[in-house]
Length: 60
Image 1 (cartoon, rainbow, N blue to C red):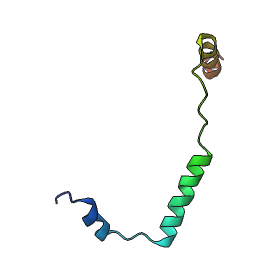
Image 2: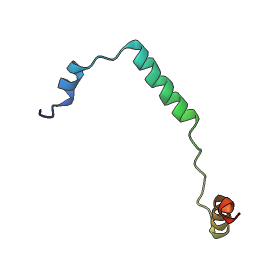
Image 3: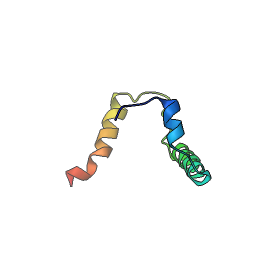
């Protein structure tokens, strides 16, 4: 067993139309469900508020 290059690996596997379609659907769903990035970093107060919100159920 020896690791081979990408061109040789392409010859060993064949992707079906269904698997291509499933892969594309998964990629689209990952992109649509992704969390948006904030425009700026949180300041000190916002960081504290985020941590307080994140850990509020531990205080119960």
